[in-house]
Length: 187
Image 1: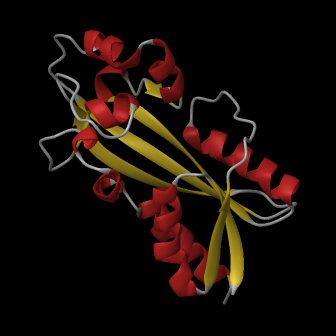
Image 2: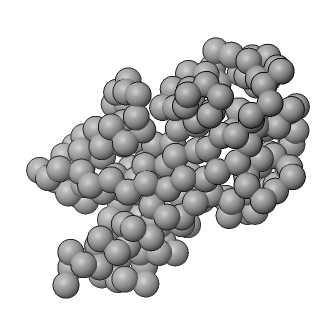
């Protein structure tokens, strides 16, 4: 079995990676370490930098992800700066920003970077479409995405679903593409 280390402490991300990569003969383990996180407008650049750093620091193949939140009305703001928005404006600030806004379309973009020591990262992306609620709701999760984001096809925010259900709403496209890449690479 080939081994890849997921640089995360998030059990749902680890479960997703295992679901798509273990059938291909990959053992997925994880390590929770702080990686340098550059300030960039695109989550792809953030994931690439962190993955390359982790692969070289740990001297093993790794996957690392970064997720952004994009509001259509504000031309994709906050994008890669979602954490900063959570820490500064928070849920109430975003609701004020959206006051009177009819088009509440939004999406999350997850960038998963795979990198081997000494190599360049390869990035795979997944998009989860939805909209911003008119008020905060839900007792699960934390922050803007969980309490304000309603995934496409649903009528409640992610925060209304317990952990074991909530992670099923996220796009798995990036994991599927990563699995295809690794399958082809190892042939």
